[in-house]
Length: 224
Image (cartoon, helix red, strand yellow):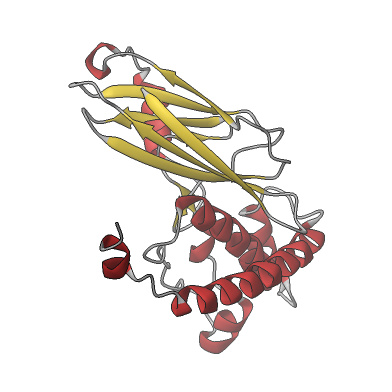
């Protein structure tokens, strides 16, 4: 199993974005274990508030198809370290002795309802029921997995903070039941706001520069 990795540290926020590129040159599918080496838990990519299958707080278990490639991305609330991961090729997929129960649990993901299923205070006040959850949003095309993972994590914290702001006792209890720890949620959301501001400013500047780039490909090809 061949692998490459990259890390990106977010300014003003103790979060590291990790991307791992896995390549399987063999003619058979191969299981792989990617373990996080940073001093913090893995914040995996999510869909509708639920971690994608194969992820746990320490890393990822999955299959890389024969002669195939797989790119993984996650965030970690810890300083960068090199290398950020260890990659273990666990042999042929048809020879791997996986525990059926553990595999089923990973595929099911988080048993709690996704955060998007909990109505906001405004929605509950508008219709009086709060029965209809907002439509889940997917990843934007072209967004790197590590960036999408970080944005998903930030969005979950902001969603929770919005639900707890001026919430009724009933709605606050529901939100708290769906959240692991809110003791420092206010500080985290404030730090997220600062980090998002920095990222937005830098992204806007880079987008402006990138739009002005016009590489003279044909002229360069004609050079001796």
